Image (cartoon, rainbow, N blue to C red; front, side, top):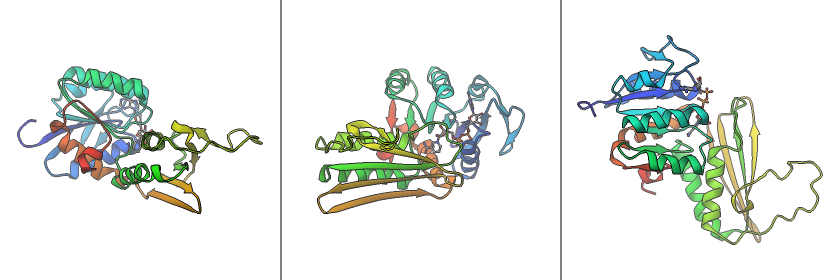
Length: 258
Ligand code: NAD
């Protein structure tokens, strides 16, 4: 790090999340926003920093940590550049899969990378609680609700929740449906056939409900994101701590001690 201040760059700086991240970094103690990249808005300003179109211009500013909230195709290229340049990366972009994770694990050797499908601390706890509950129930389904600007489905959080629940129990009841009257009625079959239902709703930000059932009882674990501010404490925490967590880290759990 340069001096005491962490020098931060933001990718997707003109986007919904990028703008919030720029504000949060500018307001946080111990860090300073030095670069902003977004090919959709070169020349505009975010928190008094001029937005540039190309990530290579950002690397030249001597950033310590770059936060990426873009789209998966862009993120793959961005992260390759950051790993080669030895810059730490904090990634919120959805849609990176297991192959990407494997490649990033191999690429981030001289700097570190943290990818979190959800930076809202309440959502991280929701996933943790769902994983704890999984061995005690035989049926589970996930309902996620996002704003109508979201292009990928299901959400990264829903997929990560299902993966963790599937890994926590091998004892899931089969789907009883033998006749699907309308295609898609049972949602997407995730890991361990846990069904995921994606709603896209104008006015919503990001909500998720995990419903588990066993004989005579159901358990609902629900998290609601009221606005994008919910993600910022997690992002700022990751920016602060990334230099001390070597290699690739997936999820905020390790930073929360759970
Ligand atoms: P958005 O469409 O508002 O913003 C994305 C921005 O990325 C756009 O301005 C676009 O021009 C820019 N972009 C595209 N290619 C780029 C590149 N090569 N370099 C720099 N910028 C580039 O979307 P959003 O709502 O801000 O969400 C961004 C991503 O973050 C999505 O994948 C979303 O699912 C994810 N997300 C994650 C979390 C989390 O907690 N992990 C929370 C909210 C959103």
